[in-house]
Length: 303
Image 1 (cartoon, rainbow, N blue to C red):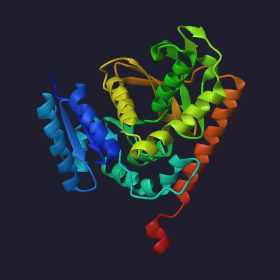
Image 2 (cartoon, rainbow, N blue to C red; image 1 turned 30 degrees about the vertical axis):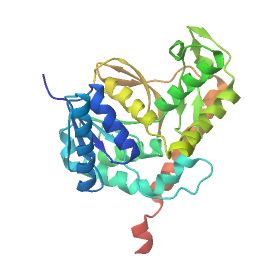
Image 3 (cartoon, rainbow, N blue to C red; image 1 turned 180 degrees about the horizontal axis):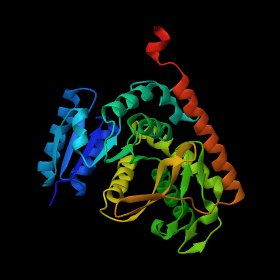
């Protein structure tokens, strides 16, 4: 049997959580870790090796340079540039300008990579598009809408007093203020329900902030979303993930059905209100991408 390798770029909070989850998940046989410096990657790999030994896992971690990640079956990008987010609303957009150069550099190094790339770095939809366009890679997906969908199903189940697994519904569009709850197509136990949208919207809006206030930032939730997407993209199981993919002339979250690892994006049935919100989100993300690509970077501004 061939060895399955998964690479993780970034040794911060999310990168650490993803790598640790991979050690015990059984998804990969090898976990390769790259970071801003070789010392950071080596430190995380050593910590993961301790975990492997203590947990009795056969998954072997080791540090590497970014260029070596082309040997992996999948690469998870969880880098985050150091910055202070001054935004009080639409907070995920706060890292666009500083994270874009990092993503661009990674995309240049991994240009032509044929495996699966999962982008976690915020703003997810913009960074996913940027990586795909610069790298030319064809299997690039953004993590975000699948985490939003998991939160939606949890929140609705709690309101209705049912098990989350009985809830079938999607959150699409932007991983941020432009998220679209597909309430009209949501079912519980196979039956249509009236979704208390205002209450659910408030829970989805406030939940990340409550987590960040308590522990600094979200980490376990994104890691779980990554594992779920990896299982399907690596053809371990079939199923649907809500991932950022191309949609017309922009990129945003849509359900993606994986069959034997092959992705097919689709849209659920939307009512008129949901379609208008999705159209507005598409325009917003297209405009944000244009601004990102046409605004001079720090080096250009000081030249």
